Length: 298
Image (cartoon, rainbow, N blue to C red; front, side, top):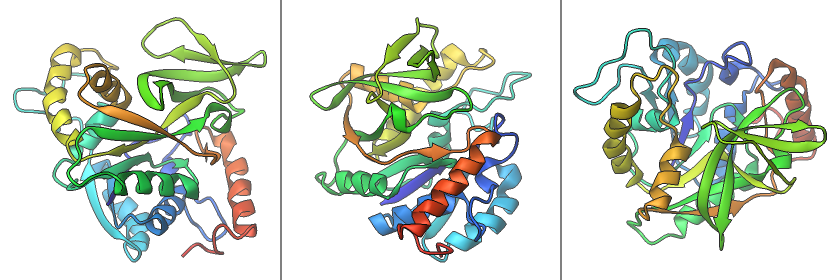
């Protein structure tokens, strides 16, 4: 089973390449913890989706270390990786989004897989929940996707807003996913949809997506079919993004897929802003001290 890591972002709000920030005394990155947790949950290979420009630095600092633990492959998310008949509009600099990132790995993804963000810590339980879900499906399943969702209160930062997919469900299955900017205002959690819809409030236990999706292999066909259609409508919109939550939302609404919501008690943490780093370092140390991870990790 494959682990696919979205690591092409340069982390503009953080002010640098977040994936290569050392987070403990042994010099490990958040990615090291993700791979360590995924490996012990049963995943046996990892595909890093990165920018070609920092392949050498990434391989030297992360790849060479983890390839001793798990099979490692690399895919490159580049602006000019477009279907035949399309070219990058003049002045376009923003990446095409998370769905395009997975599309960039189309030649490497060969089996059911999960995706994660490269700059997020999800916790050991999260990977076990994801692995057990996929392992429990009949062989050759199609459109039986899942999302390991977190309570929104376990995904917040005190240093600004965060982007999350707010889930709406019926009988444990997603009915709608609204990508939103979320922050606390006057003691309330306020979600502002990225598509321009009116803001709304949610409770502390509202489940949100942290981009940890479980996919059957058929999602790759959906992306190959859908990306040209999306480009036809959005290629000349400067900041438009082909986002995996939007793809899933559309597939569910059209009845072409279902998405089961799997919950986890794990507490997310990450480095959205530079000010987040001290708290992340302290949280990792606490987990090591409790025996969740061994000293030095590897």
